[in-house]
Each structure stands twice: as C-alpha cells, then as structure tokens.
Amino acid sequence: MIPIRDTTPSGNVPVVTYGIMALNTLVFLISMGLSPSDTAVFVYRYGFVPAKITVPEISAWFSFSSLLFSTVSYMFLHGGLWHFVGNMWFLYIFGDNVEGFFGSLRFAGFYLVSGLASASLHFMFNPLSNIPTIGASGSIAGVMGAYFILYPRSKILTLIPIIIIPWFVEIPAFLFLGFWFLMQFFNAAGGQNSGIAWWAHVGGFLAGIAMVKLSSRIPRSVAGEKLKRMTARKKTPQLQVIHPAPLGHTPDLAGEIVISSLEAFTGTRKIVNIPWGFYNRLYRVKVPPGVKQGTKLRLAGMGRDNLKGSRGDMYLGVVIKNAI
Image 1 (tube, rainbow, N blue to C red):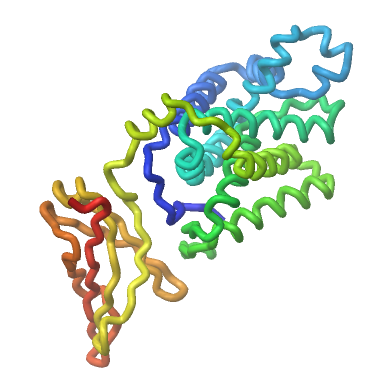
Image 2 (cartoon, one colour; image 1 turned 45 degrees about the horizontal axis):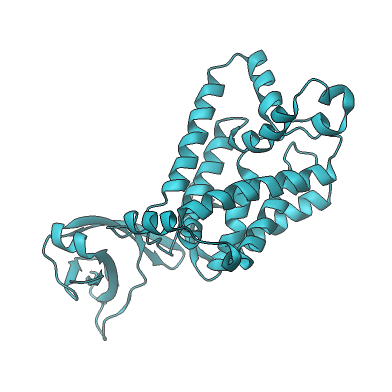
C-alpha cells in the first residue's frame, strides 16, 4: 500500500518538515559520493550502534561526544535510494499536519525526541548489537503515532497496485496507521531478522502518541506563534478527493471543490480524484480567475450513464475558504 495524500489539509506550510527533508537529502547525496569502504566507516561512525556503548573494546575507540552525536546523526542516514525515498515520502504525507498541531519549533523538538525514543527502545532489546541502526524511520514513526491520535478519521488516499491496474482507495487513518503499527510490533516480537530495526519503529510510534497526550504541558514560544502566522497557507491542496452525489433524477452529478480566496482571485488548476466503485479517476479542473462562492463548474460527460448511451455532466460547486 502506497499512501498518496491525506484528506486533512494543513493550515500552514510545514517549514520544519521541509527542512528535515532537505537535510536528509543533503546527507544522502554526500553518502552516495563515498566509496564502499568509506561508506561503511561513515555509517558505523554516525549510525547508532549499541555495542559502541556496551562493549568496552569498541567504546574505547569513540569519544563521549561522538557517542552522543550518533544518537541524533543516525536519523539522517539511509541505506539506499528506496530506504531514503520511502522515509521522505511518509514524512511528506504525515509531517505537515503534525507540525501544524505542535507548531514548527515544538515539532522540531518532537521529531528529535521521537528519534531518541526510537533508539532507546532498540537499545533495550539489542544492547550488544554491533550493527549500525540508520534512517529516519523511528522519528517518522513518531510522526505517524501522533497523526494516529490527532486525525484518526482522516482518510489516506492509498494506491494499491493490482497486477498492472492502479487502484486508489481511501483508508481511514486509524486503520492505515494501526495496521502499520501492528506489523511493526509483531515483526519485532517475533524476532524477525530482516535487517530492519522493528523495535525502533515501535518506540518512535509510542513516543509520538505520548507526546500528543503531553502536548498541553509543552510551552509555546512567542517566536513559534509568529512563525505560525508567517507560514499560513495561501492555497488549498493541489489534489482533492470529490465524492459526487446524484443531481435529482438526472444522470448529472454534483460535488464540491475547495479553493482559497487568493485562488478565487487569481484562478487555479486542481487535480480531482473521483471514486467510481472499484476504480478511481483523476481529472484536471481549471478554476477561472474571479470565481465567486457557490459558482458551479461544469465538467461535461463526467456524470452517470443514461439510458441513451451517453453520459451526464458533473457540476462542482466552488467553496472558498476565508471568502472575502
């Protein structure tokens, strides 16, 4: 299952999420430029290795500051292209809403604490491991745990490939993320030896839940509130899911498309996903400049089949957020 987007828009540009993604990208590009032998040294030095703490013969080669730094630096290392892409995509999908809840500055702390909790649980179950643990998965698991609590009824537009047919389906967040967590837990409890730090994922997810519960005790800064106002979004999501309804006894259908006041003034283009039973179809919709609240956009031939072998139309009512 590949998540495409969630249906809960974020009210702010997630500057910290994008910054974390940029830093991960920079470190990944640096590691890609190393030789295989240098890569092994790089990963061992900056990855989280429990044996560097618990085995005297190994810990003697590393300073205290190096050991301390590796508990953070491991979050920005990845073992390959798909490991990197997968982590960044999940952070992109779920990070903006969680950052919107905590605020950008508190989210930065949340992300680091999730990573530290992830490493701690992995350490508890693997104290003598000499295998480097790397990747943003633990911190991102924290983001997913927070999302699980904050937006359980949000829908995750998910791509499920069926042979060569792409099937798009909306899955409630509590099912998508709950299933993901159970898979991590059972793999960890079952001792799956696939090179994946399952307990790290479990630790990050639980830490994310705990920090949401304790969020009211985490102080908000004046700088954080100013940053929140500065990063307020001026546009609605590019991809929107439309659930059309029959328009009377005709083959026409009716739905809604959401745009911002700025987009209503300047005009915009959106991609809408319209579920049709077992299939979902994507359409490009052009919203003309100067459109008003409640305006109907006609999509010719996108309605239901009628008895004459043709199709009705679809009418999308324009909903303007923060209408002026």
